[in-house]
Image (tube, rainbow, N blue to C red; front, side):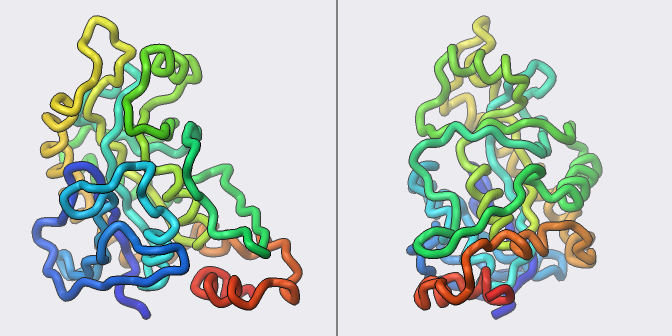
Length: 287
């Protein structure tokens, strides 16, 4: 099916898109289980969009409990080729202040308990992940951020931690020693799976706090984070609305669309039939 070409993943504080003219909700069955919620399909300023709340309605799903594979697989089934992600992050540098927006282009993985590939069970693939963010999409979002009046920072390293607890001070100082820029709990698996699914992916890292490395301040709390979430969500929506027409009209000139072309190593004749069927939306044109 081809319900929408652009998908939006909303994080903390962004559970819906005001102004989205909802056409219908779509529940997608996947070989990996259920996505976080039904996909909301609608039009925003004339552009068809598929929206998914990462943590589910009512924010009921922990970062470690998110079924990332099902979420990205569902977008693929719906015809999405570009995903815009929004998520709350902590700042690891003085220059990134609460309500600033960072558009990271690199990740460091500090997760431990998460499935982050579609492959295995009889099929092996290794996609290139040196540049994990679609630069074309990220640049467009950053430009729209400036139009929206946000303080924008292009590029940077996102540390993806397991959570749900926030960092210890020792961890926070360690990440700063690595010259990392922001810290969050969700985006890395989305980026990995989007690349395997040949979907362009970029994220808006919405700064809510200074983690806990600034010892002159109280350690980060949920109350502090939530104090900035609503303001960040309003800005994220403005960015999405400005970027959508540009992204809907672009020709994908990036490498994301062909990420699997040379990545599948398994002899096609030995791929188990069920795996071939389950991964059809992702590998079908190659096997």
